[in-house]
Structures are given as C-alpha cells and as structure tokens.
Image (tube, rainbow, N blue to C red; front, top):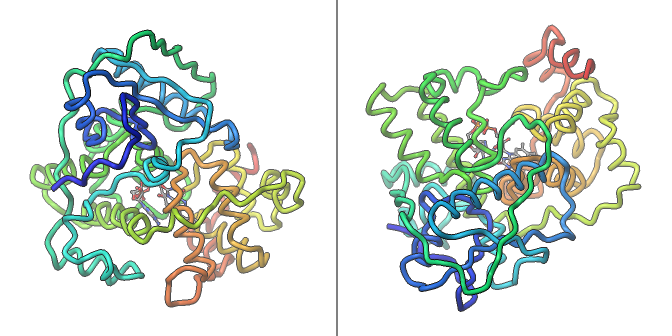
Length: 370
Ligand SMILES: Cc1cc2nc3c(=O)[nH]c(=O)nc-3n(C[C@H](O)[C@H](O)[C@H](O)COP(=O)(O)OP(=O)(O)OC[C@H]3O[C@@H](n4cnc5c(N)ncnc54)[C@H](O)[C@@H]3O)c2cc1C
C-alpha cells in the first residue's frame, strides 16, 4: 500500500522537497493525475548555510530533475525562500522503504530501539512497500511561468547529484556483484566500493528506498540471497527506523557561530587525535565519511572532548552531501546517550578502533597527505 501524499498548499504549486526524482514519487504522480496545470518547485532557503560539496550535490540533483521534468513537458522553479510550514515535513523527511501503513504494528507501538523494531518488522514478513512507476507525461506549467535553467557549480564530487547518476551508480553496484561482499567490507576505511554509497541519493530523494529494496529482492532472486544482501537491507532499515522514530524533529540546525573555537577545530580538522583528524580531513575534502569513521568522530566529540552532541551534528549537517536530518540526529543522539538507546550512549575506545580499522596507519597517512 502506498502512503498518502503529504499535504500541499492548494493550487498548481507542488513542493518536491527531498523527493528529487520522477520514479516512485507518489506526490508527483498524484499531482500529475489530478491537476490541469502544475508548477513543481523547490524552496532553496538562502538562510540555510551549506558546505560547498553539499550545495554542489543538491544543485546537480535539482538540475538533473529539471532536465527530466522538461523532457515530460514540465519544469522546475527554484524559490529563494524557506518552505511553507504546511510542507516542512516534505522537506525534512525522506520517504521510507516500508510505508507506515505496511508496518505490522500501529505507530504508538513503535519500539524506541532498533533491535526490537527490526524483529517486529521481520516477524511481520514485510521487507518493503511496492514502488510505483514514473509518470510518462506531466501537466503544463501555469500560463506565463518561466523557470530559469539551474546552474551547477563546477566542483568535482565523489558522487554526482541527481536521479540519473544515482540510478547508474546503483546499476553498476549490482552489476559488479558488490552487494555480495557488502557485509565483509562495510567497516573498512579506505576505498569507495566498501559500502553501497547510496546515501547521498537517498538523502535528497534522488533514489527511492522502496525501489532499491525492490531491486535488491530481484537481485536476490537472480543471484541468490546471502549475508551481504541481507545486511544491506538491514542497514536500509536503520534509515526507516530513525525517520519513524521522528528524530528529524529534534533539530540539528544548532545555531553555529563560525568563530566558535570548536567549529574552527572541526573545520581545521584539528581535534588532537590523528585518526579523528584524518576523518575530518576526509569529510572536509569530500563531503562524505564512511559509517565507521562517523561513529569514531561522534564518540570522540561527545565522550573525549565532552561537547554537546549538537555541535558535531550541526557540523555534519553543514558538510555531508548525504545530510539526512533523521539519520544524523538519531545517530548522534544514540552515540551521545541522549536518544532512546538503553545503553546510555556508545563510547568507542579510539585506540582500539585505530588498531582494528587502521592498523598500519594507511588511512591516516592518506588523509594527512591531502
Ligand atoms: C554520527 C553519525 C551521523 C550520521 N549522519 C547521517 C546522515 O546525515 N545521513 C545519512 O544518510 N546517514 C547518516 N549516518 C548513517 C551512515 O553513516 C551513513 O548512512 C552511511 O555511512 C552512508 O554510506 P553508504 O551509503 O555507503 O552506507 P551503507 O553502509 O552502504 O548502507 C546502506 C544505506 O543504509 C542506510 N544506513 C546505513 N547505516 C545507517 C545508520 N547508522 N543510520 C541510518 N541509516 C543508515 C543509509 O541510507 C545507507 O545509504 C550517520 C551515522 C553516524 C554514526
């Protein structure tokens, strides 16, 4: 069953928010079927400060969507203003792999920690909700509306923004049979193919989590299910979990003073531990960081430096090309012990992590040299 479209203001305007794709986009499909004229818009709030990588990824995603919309008789207008309150949820909460209506429990019975949540989902036997196809044609724009062509900054990115690039990436990932080795490699620090790298496209809705899970099930039917394919689904379910738990409603837009010495330490990648500093060098240079390094960095900030989790979360929100409010806040709060995790926080022994994941110092040397 599909989730009902999020509420939109009346009329011809459709706020796309973090659903920057044609495929499996119920919001767009229902507007296309019901409105004689349609103006798809994205509110690019000038008050939101973004790192250069994140901004470039987002603009590339918007430009790619604009090109696809134009091919179907529509267009995309960027509004330099915050999204209206009525559609805030569309911007803050990307869609999930499993729709709320398909969960085997009522929302008030939603477990507050991941393992019981996953167990309930697995017991219910639902792995994903079925995706829907992209609309073939779209209604014309209202008379007289002209949408300027979106300009993309020339900046080399680790992942190209947009639905087209996301679909190519996912296809290549499966063609190379990388889901099979995912569980063994996902915690390694140095190398792009070690994990799926789907997060930037998921965060901005360039790829649909329902489509990914559907494709993954087809992949399993073709090549066989294994530990790797299961674990990829297991990790995608974490994303649903934080979103369902509503972590995006606790803001990671902590008001940042760029002159705050802690912000300067993060921006200068000078926190005082070689592994953590290498992580921030990677984040600052690329707008991306693997999950293991995010955990190490967050634990160091919260437990070794004793900073409120909001500082590091705000820095991640600014820098990450895959910034997703629910996943960011949920992970930071659980590591800090301020979330619903019953373990009262997760403090990582940083030296032990270095011995396990960078025993020969290759990761630290690689990022020290850049
Ligand atoms: C402190 C901290 C902050 C984080 N902030 C974000 C964020 O802003 N945006 C974001 O997408 N992820 C965030 N994560 C989760 C995770 O680190 C990234 O999703 C992952 O590293 C992205 O790389 P990947 O696509 O190769 O992941 P893979 O390992 O290939 O996992 C596949 C997908 O599963 C989901 N996923 C995996 N791990 C998690 C997790 N722990 N929580 C939620 N979803 C998960 C992601 O959508 C990911 O793309 C954060 C983790 C930590 C510890």
